[in-house]
Image (cartoon, rainbow, N blue to C red; front, top):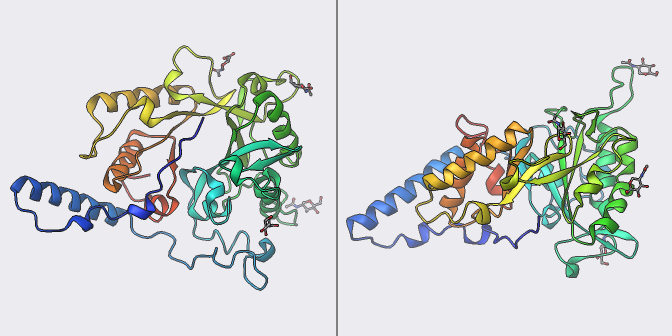
Length: 347
Ligand SMILES: *[C@@H]1O[C@H](CO)[C@@H](O)[C@H](O)[C@H]1NC(C)=O
Ligand SMILES: *[C@@H]1O[C@H](CO)[C@@H](O)[C@H](O)[C@H]1NC(C)=O
Ligand SMILES: *[C@@H]1O[C@H](CO)[C@@H](O)[C@H](O)[C@H]1NC(C)=O
Ligand SMILES: *[C@@H]1O[C@H](CO)[C@@H](O)[C@H](O)[C@H]1NC(C)=O
């Protein structure tokens, strides 16, 4: 899907306390109270999760525990509980992939461009650098991680441990947003995924059955659905489509050819106003989408969620979680995961 430029919320996270000047009318006092109470309740639910030191300050530097992945996985992910959150525009993070894993997100997204015979990762052409490639940022680190997670020893000969120590059967979704010509770019993706495929680490579908592996590849943006369908008659399908969440009815999208079903929240559901509650009509639409996705075995996801004000963003997250959203799309990983979503009533 074409990603909108999402407004990062981290710089404007205190819209409420900054308006704590005297409020006079009963209505404004009531609004103020309701807002502050819900923010406080949110904070209560959302107490800090990863309380350890930020491992990313000196990432990869010699002499630190993060050099050469020597620390992976036991130290790094010891307390990390995987969560159904999708790290939108993951490559913007201090350390792509690993920041999302550390936050517990089970989905990451890379915008990929075919340039000069290689696949580069970046939000726009200005951000592309020759050394930030699909292989260097995603494929190679995943091969390293999964090699460590699946050692061959006297005690273990398995191959299917995923990236999360605390839940080795959890798959990691690698959402690939093709930014350049689909039919030209897609074969490069398949070629560069080969180190993961040949080791049996990709989810695949064969004879109408989906088999989950440590990594699930999903194509979006310019990804051509017919190339995803491709040659599965001759070999198992190892990449899946990001189906349109609002157009599933009467469609051929199901878990044998697609994994996510996504749509822009703003386009499909609309604006959620200051009071922060989706209307009954909006709720009805959301429920319809989620039901349809679920019945096809697809993981529902909205992108372009409201980012501000914070209480609206949190309330929309909460509603989506209550309604059983498959994957919560997040731009602000800290806000989404330094919250205890594992408490009752949340994830
Ligand atoms: C990638 O290239 C940039 C600029 O060309 C450089 O500053 C950076 O250190 C390089 N990174 C790596 C990991 O080689
Ligand atoms: C794993 O394979 C090796 C080599 O075939 C064998 O020596 C070892 O006992 C196996 N370990 C387990 C747990 O089966
Ligand atoms: C799969 O399909 C693509 C596109 O139609 C084609 O280029 C490629 O050669 C096919 N691969 C195999 C193994 O048949
Ligand atoms: C999935 O869809 C394909 C084609 O759209 C269809 O042939 C297949 O039977 C469906 N499989 C399931 C499990 O619904």
